[in-house]
Length: 500
Image (cartoon, one colour):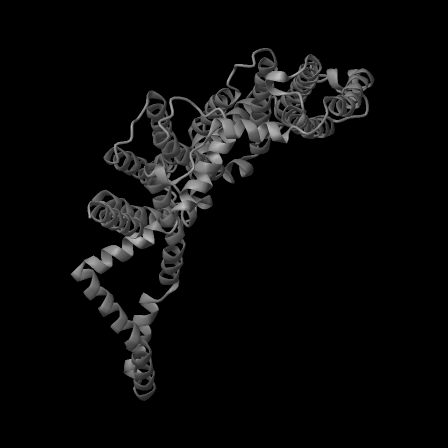
């Protein structure tokens, strides 16, 4: 009898356990609150990032999103290490870029940076990281794609449960269905009445024109685009605070994956890379006079400054990118790499990196010569910035060959953030305008291209106005009266106060 009773108890327990497994998950008030916030933030993101000029409003938006994420994760009892606090500070600092510059390209790049860095911040807090992940590319894939998309539909379930459990929400649902049903009938009656009376036709035409104009359909499109954005934001936050349901990043698995990628014999790699290195040596020997003239500020025979600098720079720029790919290929696909990396593989990696640094130095010397002759442009500024970033990466690659324990992902990340911060906060177009004006007044430039300056953002125009290079009338003639949001950043606001 006792055994039967115990058996019945076990069956009942199993039934209850099975019932618990199929029970709907319960969502907290914090989940509901962050879901509502995500909807609002997603609409504002679409409206003030994708559809309109970015400025003070966008700064406030990103600060709000970061703050809401921190509050939500604190509610979920997530721990914030010193590293994660540093990440939060970086996000807050870069959120101010939209307010201090009018440069559209810089702001677009900053949006991409904040999205990537913000996703990694949420991921890092959920993982209780104390440093940059050793396998950063894998971590970024989880932060940007795997985790958010794993709970992409969870916000819809929360909304559905909230509506079903709320009497007012249920009533609103019924009202919406009723309105949806009556729309076709109302439209038919309105059409008949409009055809019967001219006065009513003019009245209804005016009303529909006011409410259903271009702005109305823009708002509808923004609302449609905001839905997947909201689901992504909420999915990201929810997934990283409910990690027991997901596959966390496993360093052993990542190590095994990288090990499995090593399928090429080192001898094949050496054979493939050796001709490239020999070609570089022959190239430097045969073209020594051509390339080294960049360091002496002299032109090879038969070249103009424009032909010499432009041709050489972009060729060397392409070679630098190819060399970066070759170096990564050797480290990833050689059988004996990583801790087992042979001296020969290290030698080839260092050799290619050194050749690349020489090419970058030559290319930059050419660009400096060209800039001194013809002035600074946005393209010259940005490509030079990128070449410097490449040089830093290759220096870190060289150091890595001698110090295997060096965390190259962390160092490259820090270097990139520092370089990107210089790009954003230096207000490049302001530097371009100031440099060209000073070079022109010093007699180094034959003419000052004010049309190009006026075609840049208000960063450049404000600098030119402060330097008395352009007049107030030229600025007023160039400014568009229809652009209502152009004053939503510091440069444009100051310029408007001075000339409007």
